[in-house]
Amino acid sequence: MILSAPVLDAPDPHVLADFYQRLLGWTVVQDEPDWVKLRPPGGGTGLSFQTEPIYTVPTWPAAEGAQQIMAHLDLEVDDMEDACLHAEAVGGVLADFQPEDDVRVYLDPVGHPFCLFLREPEAPA
Image (cartoon, rainbow, N blue to C red; front, side):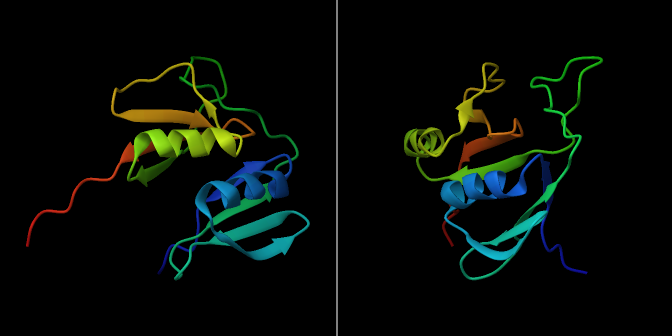
């Protein structure tokens, strides 16, 4: 088995796919009325979006009795400042609660959290 793509629910998958396409620079490979799929350049695991008519925005940070986050995306970046500026420029919103100094939590246009963190330098061979 190969993981094809995690799927994010949204009231309008095209709006959310457009955000992630601009954030990641990926290509739309499937575009249907209730489904959009993105793939990274060179292939690999993609990211898909589907219509969920009763979508409820998750609460960040989690709160008892509120809609819980079922999953979130971790995105490695080379430059935190540039990545944060880019995320904001395409429509990401910096979350009020930031649990760690070396990670930035953002919310996408429908409230899914995603984290930016610095790529670990590769160990010398």
